[in-house]
Length: 235
Image 1 (spheres, rainbow, N blue to C red):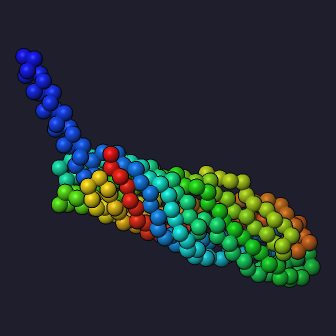
Image 2: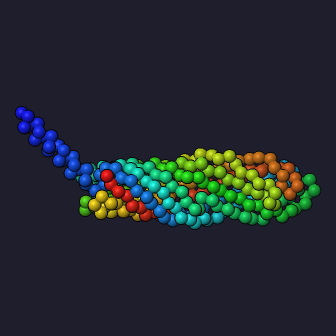
């Protein structure tokens, strides 16, 4: 009986060990880097003593980088996993400068005012289920259904005199993606594309523009394309 138990235990340990060494099966830790293109739309509306409307769209390109960790199961060619990530990029600070026409509602006089707007996104924390198919044992095609959260804020300055920024607001956005991963033993190499569906920010305050006090509303909205490569080690 004792020998039978030892045999079954050794068989279980051997099977578990073999299963754990399968590609795309278990915990992994790695780093990723790439390129992002973010489109940011900024609106600035003034009403009251003056009237003015400003709307501008700008594309901001940058380098992105970060860390990732996750766990997955390769179940006879069907892959199920979940991944967490920490990311930042050089496109997160988008600056725009534009000249707007400001109308004094009392006198009808029109002034030209230089406006600078800025949008900033802090470090991004991501959580993403991964679903895919393992082909030929060491190739993985997958989709990601990710969520990213960050603290964002925007700012503007009119005529180089009124510097102001909104409170930081936590935003959570949906970021679906597709990718390909190749296993070289315990080393996993991937290429991935993701689309950041974006978030909206809005804030209103009273300030002075062109010497007149007015209610000013600033809005910002962004979307982004992300192209990344990554390397991780499977434990």
